[in-house]
Structure formats: structure tokens, C-alpha cells
Length: 386
Image 1 (cartoon, one colour):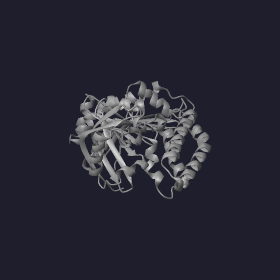
Image 2 (image 1 turned 30 degrees about the vertical axis):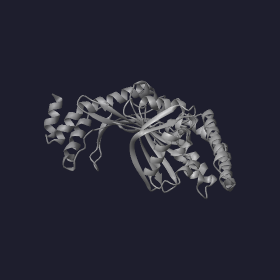
Image 3 (image 1 turned 90 degrees about the vertical axis):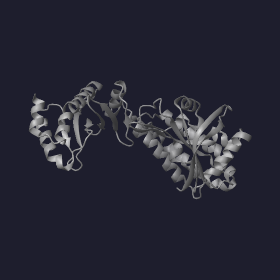
Image 4 (image 1 turned 120 degrees about the vertical axis):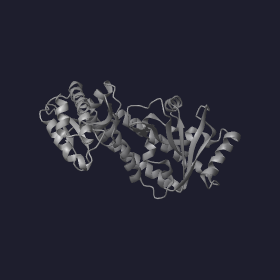
């Protein structure tokens, strides 16, 4: 999708449904070749909380996707990327560049502050993100799956609408594990109401094909709600390994990121000397829980024979867990795991495995680093014994 965009540090005044003003100081505006206008704005935590509470930029709870991490931090700013309601693009018809559109919005902000282009309800949030030290966190909305700009395109089909709706729902179930039949129904009602408003305000008689496509898609999706609800029940089962895993790290106050489409959590641990990444994985079918500490340094090719000898010696005698080496890239990690086939996994069991794991990495990390720096395996092992 080709686009032209520009970062602006200037003042714009948007307003919401109650005509309260929302100052915007810095933003990116992009006009794309796909006849779409996108706005990217950053807000501090307090303003974002207001936006979330009031569902501004159409950030309605029913249409928010699964969150990719525990929560937003007080800093840095939170970014919202939104797309303009398609029927309002006509107001930008004489703007050929993003700079033209920005200048037009500035003029409107000063001369016509109640213009629909400055109404938060005219913009549909696609995603909400925040850049943190551990990486980007946040969530996508339903409109990131079914972009409002696509609704006006030719040959738009009910199959495409249904497919995108199903992607949204399926990923909600897989990632969050929190959907229930009532939430599904509320989401469908919200989508249906939005489509109905568009059909009443946006499309003319020549767009009846789109209307029919939407009707067909909603009918098809309603028939599938029962199947999705059943899938949600499986994932949200309180006895599932994934749920118990999430319960433990939440209760134990670990910050984590849910890896999209996988029953895996990414975490970080600060040891005595260094910080490293950890992964917790649920293997539901096998009824197994696995936890990894990934060493913050990799073994170069010239040191892999030595580190293999060192780790082999260290592993001999270990009771809970073991070190592993990926000979293809030099990654070193410590693994602890448990098989609970026929039993119940508990947060107490997870705690033992997790803290045994990170303490072992913490204890042996100096030895690993020493070997990688060129000290002999024998000398390092002798130092550990002492």
C-alpha cells in the first residue's frame, strides 16, 4: 500500500460525542493509494484512559482484540492508529498529499471546529500500542481485520467479511482464552449495529451488493457462534495448563507477553549479574508444562566444543532440569518441565520449576561466560566446586 505521510507537531482540537475537546499535539497523517486516510496519534496514560473509558475513536470494548501483554506502563506515550470513516473521504478529495490534508485539518480546527473530520467518532481505531523495553505491546481492534476502507471496494464479498470476522474471533479465543457466549453475542451485535449505521448513512442504492454481502456474512457468523463458544470453553477451562500458567505469573507479579497464536508466554528475569529472556509453554495435548531460561550470551562457533563439554559436566548430577545447547546458532538455555498426565497442575508446582530454573541459570551463568571468554573448562569447573 503506497502512501505519503508526514509527522506534525502542531495543535489540533478533536471533539467527541459529547462535544468535549480532545487536544492533539503530535500526529502522523497518511493518504494511501487505496483511498484511505490514516491518523496515528500518541497520548499520555491519563488521556488514553479517558479515550478507553469513553470508547473514543470507536474503541468499544466488544471490538478490542486480545491484549499482547500484562498492561500499559505510565511511560512512554500510547499510540493509536485509526482510519477515517470511508464516506468522509469526500472532504479530502482536493487533497493530493498528506501535507494538503494536514493543512486542511488545521484550517478546520480553527474555522469549523465541529466539522465531522474532527470528530473522534469519524475515526476507527485499528491498533493501540506502546513501545516498552521488552518490546512493543498492545492490541488490535476488529477494524484491523476488516478495515472500513475495504467496505467500499468493488467485488466485496460476504465470504471475505465472514473470513475476517472468524480470524478476529479465533485469535481472541486462542490468545486471550476469555471469550464466552455472551461476549460473542455482544461483539456480533456491535458489528451488526455499525454495519447498519453505515448502510443508512454511507451507501446509496448502487451499494446494495455490499448490503447483501454484509447480511449474508452476519447470518453465516451467527450460525458459527456455538462452535466458537465451545472452543472458548476449552481454552478457558480453569484446569487447562495455559490458564494455570497465566494465573501463576499474574499472581506472582511477573510481566509477560502472550505470543500470538501460541500457548507461550515471554518473560524476563533479572539475576544477580545479568538479565535474560524466559519462555513458559503449555503443551495441552501432552499435559506438559515447560519453562526455559535463555542465556543472554550465545556460544560462537569457536567455543561450542568447549561449552558442550562444560554443560555436559554440569548436567551430570542435576536433579531438576538441564542445560541445552543449540549447535546451529549457539543458543544456551536451561529447561525445567513437568508431565501432569492424569493429575492437576498447580501454581505451586509451577513456582518450584520456575524458580529452580532461573536460579540455576543465575548460578552457572558466570561459568558459562568464563568458558566463552577462553578459560579452560577444567579451571571453571574447579572454581565452581570451590
